[in-house]
Length: 195
Image 1 (cartoon, one colour):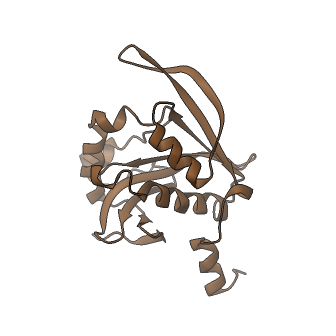
Image 2 (cartoon, helix red, strand yellow):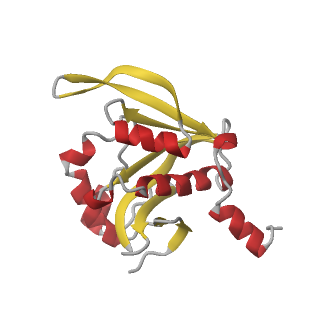
C-alpha cells in the first residue's frame, strides 16, 4: 500500500501511517540509541496493536504522521501533535527520525515545519510545546531553527543509568511561525476559501 502525500515539504512529506510502517516503528522502539535520547514527555505513542495486528489502532492521536523521504518514498520517522487543549488552544508535539542516514540532514526541520503548519493553520492552535533532554543539543538546535524558544527546565527530571538529566521545555506561538510556505494556506488559495 503506498503512502498518500498529505503535507509536502522540500525534503519529506507527512502521510497517514499505513500498516507497512509498523515494522519500522517496532525496530525504532527497540533501538536504545534512538529511544534513550528521545524527549522526556510522552515521546512514545503505544503502537503495540500495530505490531501484532498490522492495523492502525483507534487510540492513535488524530494528528499522527509517518515522515516520508520525498525522493526514496521511504518512511524515515514519525511525528505527532497530541494533548490538545481546546480551551487554551495549545498542544504538544513529538518527532523521531528513526532512519540513521536521515538524521542531521534537515529532514527533522522540514517535518517540524509541516507539523507546525498543521498545528497553527489547520488545528488552529495558539501555542505548541515540546520537551527535550538538555544533552540532546542537535535536537535543541533543530527546534530553535524552526522557531522554538526555551521557556523552562525540569531539573533532574530523568534518570538514566544513574545519571540525572534536565528536560528542556520549549514552545512556539502561532505569531512566531513563518507560514509563508504553508501547504494549507496554498491549498485554500488555490481552491478558494471554504464556504
